[in-house]
Structure formats: C-alpha cells, structure tokens
Image (cartoon, rainbow, N blue to C red; front, side):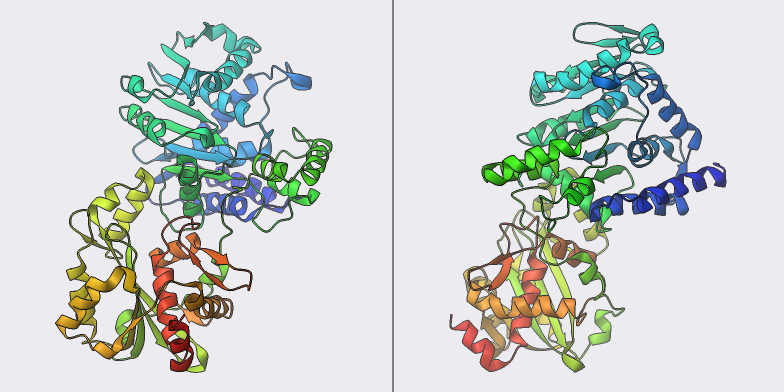
Length: 553
C-alpha cells in the first residue's frame, strides 16, 4: 500500500496548480479536482503507486530535447505535465496489478508541447514498461502525420546517451533489445492493422480523423495486452460528428460527473465559451505553457491578423484557444442546474396534479416523457422517463454505449427490443400513470406522435387532455425563457436524474432576431429529449389563455 505521505505530496502539488496565478477554464479545474478527489479518497479497487509515478517522471528527465534553444537539455516535465498527465497516467493501478487507465484524451492548444510529450509517452512504453515484446505505434490518418511523433521520439533518443545505448534506430522503426520491443508509425488503413498486438498507441491530432474506424481498430489491437494505453492528443476541431468531438464530449461528461469511467483519462485546457478571444488573460488561461513555449508576442501577432481578417478568427480560437468553433454555446451552465437538485422520489408526488410533455423525436431515437408538478410560490418539480431501442444503443460509440447501458441496467432508461421504438410500451406506461397522478394535459408534437395519440385515445386516455404542441419557435419562446429563468432562480427542482443532467449539459439554444429562444437539437452536443419534453410540459403550466395563444402559431 502507498504511504499516506506519497499521496499527500501529490495533493499539495495539485492544490498549488489550482492556486497559481494563471486562471483555469472550467474543464481544466474539473480535471484537477477529479485527481484531487481520487487521491484524497481512492475509488474502490484502485491503488496509488507513487514509486511507479516517480519512475516514469524520472525517465522523462533522461530524454533530451533536440530542437530550438532547449536542444540537448533534459526533458524536465512542466508542473501541469507532471501532475496532470504523467503522474496519474502511470501512478494509478488496479488491485490486481493492472494499470488503471487504458484510454486517454488530452486536448490543448498548439505549442504547449503536445507532440514532444506524446513521443515521451511512446518511449516509456518502448523501454521502461516491463512489457516483453511491446509494440508501440504512433497512429494518424496519414503516414506523414504519424511520422511526426515517431521522428520526435527518434531524435529524443539520439540526443540521450542512456536511451541511445539501449535502442536501435531504423528508418521506419525503433527497437529495444532488452524487451524485444518496437516503435513504428502507422497510417490509417484500418484493414492492415488487424494483425497488430499493440501495447501503446499514440494518436496525434485526432481532430483530423475522418471517422472512428481508426480509433476503434486500434482499441481492438490492444485487447490482448495486460497494461495497454491508447491516448489521443489533439487541438480542438470543428466537426461535431467526428470521433474527436465524441472523445471531447466523453471526457467532459466524465469531468462533470455525468459518466463514471475509471479507466478513461481526460484533460482539456481551453478558453471558456464566453471568454473574449482577444484578451491576453484568456490566452494565458487556455495555454498551460503560456510564457514558456507559448510566447505572448506570438499571440499578439496572430490576434492582430485575426482582427483584420474575420476568416482567421475561428482558426485563432481553434488552434490557440482550443475552442470548438462550430460548437453552439451550451445553454444552461451545469452549476445552475445542479443548484436546482432536491431530494424527492416520484412516489412522493403520487396523487398530485401535473402536466406532461411527450417528445417522440423518431422511432430510432431517444423518446422522453416529462412530468412537471406545480408547487407553491411559483416553483415546480420535474421528473422524466426515457425509452431507447436496444439496437440504437449498440450503434452509439463505444464509450457512450457503455454509459447508456449502465443507465439502462439501473432502470434509468427503458429499453425496447429491436431497432425501432415500441410505442405500445410507452402507451401502456402512460395509461399506468393515470392511476397514480392527475395528468391535466399532455403536450405532444403531432408530426411524430400521431400514431401514439391514436393508441392513447383507443386505450381511454382523456381526449381533452391531449394537446398539440407544434415545434415552432413561437411555441417554444415563452416556455424556453421560463425554463431558463426558473433554473437560474432555483425554482425548477429535479432529483438529480443523471440522464436529464447529461441532456441539460448537451443542450444548445437557437435564438432569432427577436431574442426568442428554443432548444436546438441539431446544434446540441448530443441527446436533449428530456429537456424538450420538460419545456413542452412547462408550456402547459403557463396559463390556459397564454398557452392556447402559443399553440395557434
């Protein structure tokens, strides 16, 4: 077992990083806080091994820089690299002796030492991970890109007398005779990668991956190893359908506490969405190596060019502030949503009057039902239910699929067999709710719900309680603003439902020229059906006269 003093020293170092003058984005703070929590109270089944963390950090000091004014000098990790990347990646173990983290994702702006650090992680896997026959690869969509990390590793080894004495450098590979290990660059022809048995996988500039096939086939190639590590290091991109965005969102959800995955490492350094891009304080905030490898003068030059050429602004924000330039700004801050949590169960609301919203977006998508219960003093309680076809879950990305299946196993999401929604199950559930609650009105979108409404009428659901809610911004404007206002006033109470929390975190809002707002599914990071259903139900609580007027639009 590790000595308490070992963990205490790491905790002190992390607290120093939090307290340093350089400001931190919300996501960077959350990454530090995750590690502080883990060290302070290790999750069940995990053990901190200070000796292994220190051994790996010491190995980096044996490497040498090979270019610029640092050429020939030892690779001394910066505090953020040591405490936030290398120590946790190599210091955490499971009780059975396997390393904790098998996958990881690091996202930082350019010129913060990403490639050099990635090369160092590859060298560690090649010479010092006690893995016989270790196969290390740098992977990218093009051989030229994969060769960047590989060539950095070659030059770092050549510059180090110790590493050069134990490694043999070839044109397209590096070998270490002691462990019979090898390091080579691999391009993205996924079919040719099936035969590899990889120990360490280094994915550079993941935002350039056109799809998830390369990432997935590399994961499969590590399956036979005891301590595999696949890690992506990248700057932000702009394609929200990409594997890079999926990994970004997966890490965000882990850091925010929406997902629980002790095997996945994540760190994101960036500017916050509302930060002014031309503010030097924001430049420092987004760049942990600001003033070291990232010089203020360079930023001033790039910012001047961006100001006179609007087309360069997004490039500046993406490459130098690590902002996803095509990402819609999140609508509801998570701290505001979390402040609305109250302790209650659905059973506590039995017999109460409520209003319902039913969002049946598609027969191959998430379907959500929200119940909104009016409370005294203009407050409300909300409770949501969800249905997802089993095959739709299986089609999600590997990480997201695991989380959705976990929610389903806990009964937080209802699954229906096959690849389409079983609307009869939803109708049966709704009819059962009539025995427990007084549903005054049920709002539904006639475009998607016509069949369900007919089934409800046939089953005896009160006809007068079924109310059309067409998906126009006119219908959404008032209840969407009310939804936002109630949250910031801590008057829309929820019971901490993790699925709804995830959806609130995904939600982006569309705003028109009149400042009318509505939830925007296309621009949102992922599913928001529970948010939509809640707003539809909330609309029916806002007064018969007002709601009736909205529904004519």
